[in-house]
Length: 180
Image 1 (tube, one colour):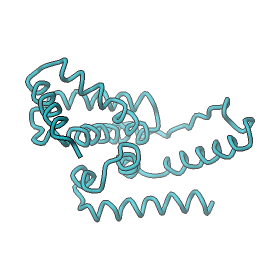
Image 2 (cartoon, one colour):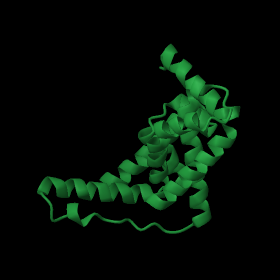
Image 3 (cartoon, helix red, strand yellow):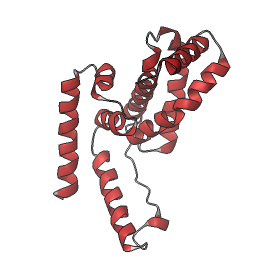
């Protein structure tokens, strides 16, 4: 929940940025850049493509900020724009991703590190088999931390439909990770 004082500050920053205040917009960028980047990375699975998506999302946000009716929804609005841009990039590129392995922390590391390393590779591979839209939903929920009501606004599904879709996706991931 946003405190009243925080809401006034947020609403003020959004209004100032929408009116063309570049410093206010820079504050918004600083506050939300990392969340947007993480979500885009989960969708694209490529740092460069994720950063391209975020940059495109910021251009859209700058242009459309005046249309944001509820400043309290700024974070979910920005993350949704970024996720949409990442999905667009993935649709345009239609390329196969190559998973890069960090050999410094690979199988030659400690036994507990080896188990974690293998689980991370398995999770990346399982996520890679999902569609960009499904990866976006997972990223918006578990990376950006949007709840089912915020996700419903982003996806156009009902909150219960969003929860059901997430449950199906998590079931798919569990099956691939634990039954393989």
